[in-house]
Length: 170
Image 1 (cartoon, rainbow, N blue to C red):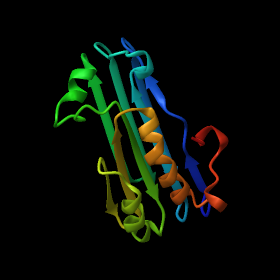
Image 2: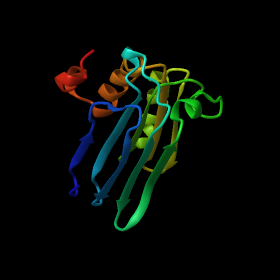
Image 3: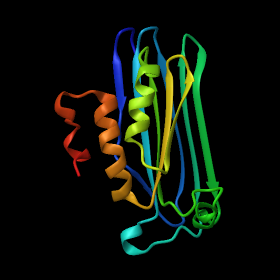
């Protein structure tokens, strides 16, 4: 991402189905003065059909660098009976959807308190560097995740009137 430019990486949810095997990696290189918002929403199973992830493999890695320096690294790996792991209190306490978000920008610290105010009880936000804000939300399912995520994305993208791309409308 070039100096003075901004990237909003806000794809729709990835749905992991039973017996799926997915390994993905997102690497961003930011020039000085660049801003980025990255959201990676995940839904574990086709919940509307009652599907349970009894077997599968999922590996996810998000890496953000500026001038060769690592600003953010988040790696998640789930294997085997994914549903059982998500059901554990120290796992996801039964949640079937999550989103990892990271915002990199000079104004990250100023955005922390207002972003926290938009989070549900199952969300958290931390300033992990002078200009790096990391957030995560767990939700029961995809609809509940969107209900929490859409206002947060509208705030962090600062789109006029909060207008997000049409696929993000609830």
